[in-house]
Image (cartoon, rainbow, N blue to C red; front, side):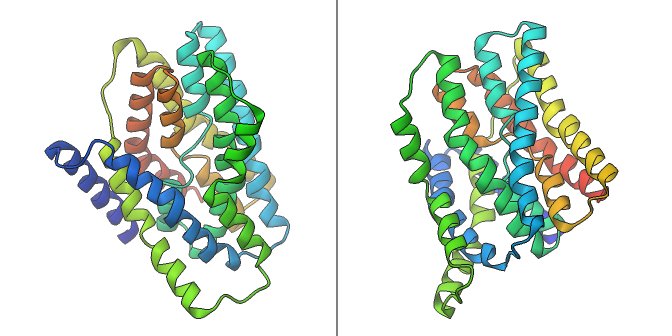
Length: 297
């Protein structure tokens, strides 16, 4: 309960700062960069060494790509069936496929599951969603906006992404004992992730809803917060998968749309008002739906 209260309080602080308009316009972006370049790598270096490498560690890696692939096909087929515009289709191919498995996912996983779930949540995020953000998202955004990107730029953005570098370092040093000062430093910096990211979410929150976007927004949110996790929960129940790794994966699939994917969509002119609506309402609704999903565990 204390973790959920922290999330709500920090979100409220961000919303309050947005309303008083005392913060710079790009303050939310600056806080996001701090999380991506400093706090998230620190969490990875702190938590991943606690992971036991066995067959359970493969589940988050494989599941993240299977879920994203299935969701992409579902969104594309729905868009074709309902004859959505190219901009709306491209936007939903980004924000419904890519979940907020770090900025929202990690705080909620920390609040709702035992501490040993964090390494699996990081694996789901860093080997799935984060890589997809730097590959799939770039390609989809360029395709639907009519822009072009080079494979060289794509490869460079992946290799130089700080959380991915931290993930590689953490795996290479799994058998090593970190010195006490390093463990203390990464742990304390990592603790700043939840409050900083939730303030950033509040600063960037947009809840304006256009009538023309009502159908795609409603369908997209239904897919993201209800249908996809329902299918995953049902599949895991049928297979009898109840490990902490499976529980973590199931909850990660219930997370709302990734804010960074929304930024990519808006930067390419893909239905920006729809994007801000889905991302904003998704974060709000997920504070209710994700705890409800956790009750099924």
